[in-house]
Image 1 (cartoon, helix red, strand yellow):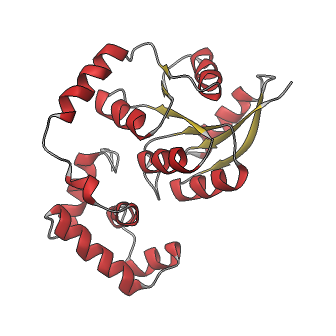
Image 2 (cartoon, rainbow, N blue to C red):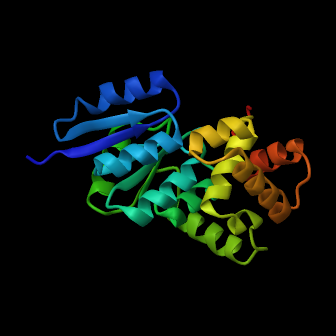
Length: 217
C-alpha cells in the first residue's frame, strides 16, 4: 500500500507531538517531517515533497496563508489547514490561496483523517461547522469590496511585514532571509508607503487587524 506522506507545521511542539502520535496510528499515513515556523515549513516541503501539508494558519516566520499560496503555486503537495479560527474570512482566503482542506482544532480525529485523505486525492474537505454555501456567499461579498492593500505587497514584503510585526530587528531579518540590513530597510520603507503606515505601532495594529498576528499577542 502506498502511504500518504504528511508534513506537520505548527509552532507548538506539544501540538505537533500529539498530531504525530494520532496520525501514526493510521496505517496509510506516514509522517514525512515537521516544522515550527512558516519559513522552515516551506523549505522542508520544497525539499521533501510530501503528499499533504497539515498547517496551522497562525504560524510565525511566514504566515500560513503565504505558505499555502507558495506551496500551491510551486508543487504537488496538497494543503490542509488545521486552525482554531472558524471565521469565514480565514476559510475563504485559505481556499483562494490553494488549500484543499480546512479543519477546526476542536474537530474529531476522524474528521482530520478524512480531510487528509480527501486532500491527498485532490478533493476539498471542510469541517462540518463550515458551510460551503456560506463561504461562497462570503467570497462573493468580499470580491465586491475595496481592494486589499495587503495584496499590493510582494511576497518578500509580506514576509518582512510579518517579521517586523513579530518584533524582529532589521539585522535579525537580514540574517534570517540572507539579505543585507539595507535591503530590509528598503523593503520596510516600501511596505509603510504601500500600506499608508508610519510607525511600528501602526505595523503591529495592521498585522493584528489583517490576521497576520493572532489577537492574543
